[in-house]
Image 1 (spheres, rainbow, N blue to C red):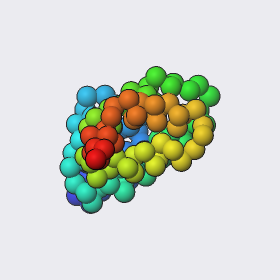
Image 2 (tube, rainbow, N blue to C red; image 1 turned 90 degrees about the horizontal axis):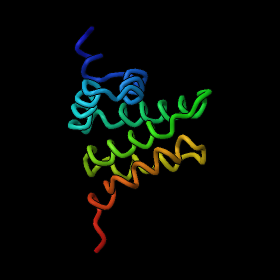
Image 3 (cartoon, rainbow, N blue to C red; image 1 turned 45 degrees about the vertical axis):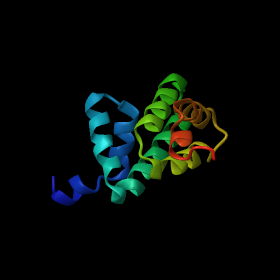
Image 4 (spheres, rainbow, N blue to C red; image 1 turned 180 degrees about the vertical axis):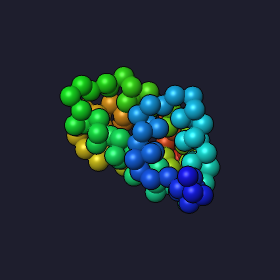
Length: 115
């Protein structure tokens, strides 16, 4: 594996990590979120992951809610609005489940408190 691929993972890799969301995957994703240059890769992977979930034969809404909740709690403030944009990009139940978890985490409110 070259250094470029390790530094900038493709959206498929990120989507797989988001779908699995094990302990190792969480550590990998936290590392991605530390670097602002990785934001586009993370968001493209999230979009792909949500699209795959919306076309799957079985919708695991609890898993998508947990993903939204974990991302809302873990992601830095600079990503909170963009995460919510991804969650609101479709009316499909997969996006709604992700949005429910993201809202429950309160990440957007912590990042941008009411005046």
